[in-house]
Length: 207
Length: 430
Figure 1 (cartoon, rainbow over the protein chains, first blue to last red):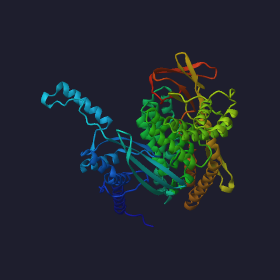
Figure 2 (figure 1 turned 45 degrees about the vertical axis):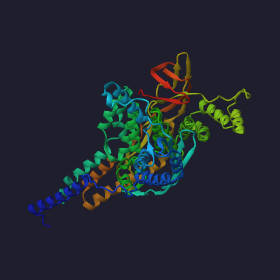
Figure 3 (figure 1 turned 30 degrees about the vertical axis):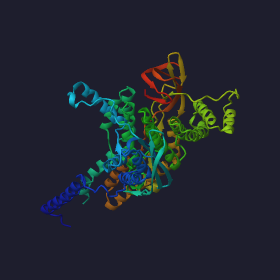
């Protein structure tokens, strides 16, 4: 067998390197693809943006059509003021409950049918600012203390889960309960509920 | 032709040597030394320097989380644990490629997924991190995770007793009495089953918890049963009432055993082709800490922490359960490597190549000495009922002869009304 010529070898070497380079360069670059926010992308089976959106959509529809709102408006001729209390995460996952709460808040405020007052944490900051105004702001722009609007209802809730697992298969059941409680007499005027059920099957093999 | 092949195979030889040559537990000593000198930051730097193969990623994340915890950065520790947990889940699927590599090179080529008890410990320490940060709901999530893991895990050495006990404390802190009772019951069951093997008795605190909750939940028969089992003398006396608020102190003591390697070189019998072969198997080396007791002192009051988990014994029991399989794999690998070497020699009619293949086989035959060694040797816990206020808590660590080995003071420990305050400390001295 005749040994390949030097030139042929070099050509083979160069082409091999080119293949390597192209493989590596595609492998290394970060690829970003923008997705529509309402597209469903389930990766791990854990709570994700889609679940959060489904919950807020359902709750918003429900809370605005429930009779408590018309009853309040009939009696007071003004939209009720709401405050967001604690939404407890009693599930088996670390879930950020802020996303659907702020989603709900946005739609509810923009509907003009209800008002929201700042939550406890936000109030502290605003009071600090008002105190500062008292010292430093011009008389005619200064906001007095003790003029805050009190809330009529508090929105509270919890996320619960039940997980049933066998081997690599899991059924995850999420239940989100929200309730609206009257600040004046502790009456619960509305209860919203959203249930989500998922079947998660993990791969048995990987590379 | 064969004259060309020798140099070309050299890079391959070199690469194979690299994967096989450094045993994990040996290279980890620098990190442990920093820890023993109470320098967690330096330990973190040393750990980052040896962030090695992708197969060891889970181990790196677990150790990092533990070091961050020791350094007092609980948020970052939670993040690192979270990443480790995600990787563990992703790696739970079987990789044929890694299985194949473990059969021809060594077991360290497989991705480290953590022993079942280590996977439970991830949630235990994550929960302790959340408690330390005052995030009870966060800790509750981990309590549910512990339950899921214990239900799903195969194998019997899981450290179930303490994991259940901790979940009970979390539920009780949240006022969820019935969940707390169920967890305490399972913890009691776990301690009773394993007390002989792990040399950990049912903690006295747990006995008090069972009596208290059985009374709160009005479980008369169960209360009577516990009274008899715990030999409570005065049957008429009320069981201990729920403390207004209390301090829960958790001592992580020392370091978990280190996996070391035991190698035997021998002549292979002629049936598999005579030649020098090596078989390497892992074993655990316990690192018994000098501290065996912790006293929690507050002015003239004092309380002794009880041993609630013997991580050392659980790790050793886990390995000994796996030894038959590891040994069988090791022997199969030796035979396979011999066959490959002989085949290479035969196909190329070149004994030098066969010798090289033999040498590669010999060098790469290393035991898998990876284990989560920044876990403690054992864990001690104390429950100290305290009124609302700010305290200076003194911890005295003592050895078997009751001599003080070290003391540590925690200032401005705040106790809130109706709540538990958590304090943890990891003491390491090699």
